[in-house]
Image (cartoon, rainbow, N blue to C red; front, side, top):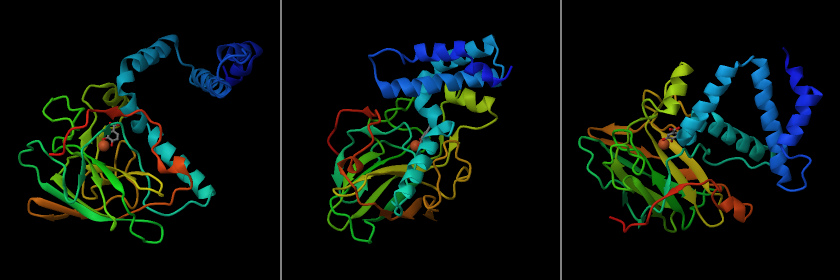
Amino acid sequence: MDTSFVKSPEVQKLLDRAAGIEESGGNPRLKAIMRDLIESAMTVIVKHDVSESEFWLAVKYLAEGSGELGLIVPGIGLEHFIDLFLDAKDAQAGRVGGTPRTIEGPLYVAGAPLVEGDAALTVDPDEGAHTLYMSGAVTGPDGEPVENAIVHVWHANSQGWYSHFDPTGEQTPFNNRRRIKLGKDGRYAFHSKQPSGYSVPPGGATDQLMQALGRHGNRPAHVHFFIEAPGYRTLTTQINFGDDPFAADDFAFGTREGLLPVPNRQGDAAYIAFDFQLQRASDAEDEGFSARARAAAEPVDAA
Ligand code: DHB
Ligand code: FE
């Protein structure tokens, strides 16, 4: 059967009713989006002649895998797509330049200790891990130092696990997570136990999907950032290690040109010099964070 079946009067009437189109209450924008979303699902079902069993398998997958939706969304390229969409809209509005944005990922935790100066991110033991030293400048569009910025930085440990989400339970809540308060010169520096590449939890919903697609669930070693500063647009980005085996094959599509520094390795130490350039904010909304729901933990005193 062809997809024109979805356009039949009976199915179109069903869509109107399902999306509450004829009801006076509810949210009109949500109704319009839901109608298109349900119609798209119906079109996929018809186009691929999805069987009843396959349909219910998909429902079961979503129900049971919902706890990993934050991992599945980057894995299927949707989080990167949002970056591409935002970039395209920026380009249309003439807002170009600066450090590229890239995916936040699902593993940020709000409330990390706010520290100044050369920040030590790692508080837990991480035997045998090399030390990462990263530093640089935060500037604006004209190269001016950005004053009073806060750099939120978070990364995995040498096992690839993030504190707060570590199934081994071995990390304290804010290990490898800090907010660094910068001064007038806009310079930042931190050191930590070097992260390893990240893999999705073995046997979980994301892993199952990746295997079924003939893909893997690995990311290169990387460090996440939010950079916020008065008058500037909050930047969400990350650097991925250019010398990691997965640097050119990130399952989450978070690696971007300009964000792949190769660490300078000297024995057990790795050095990354990296400057960030922010765009100026056009309004208050621009300065703030997206309204994404994020994990939070109780603030603790900086170690
Ligand atoms: C995922 C994990 C990350 O550490 C990240 O930065 C992005 C995505 C994930 O599991 O999907
Ligand atoms: Fe990550």
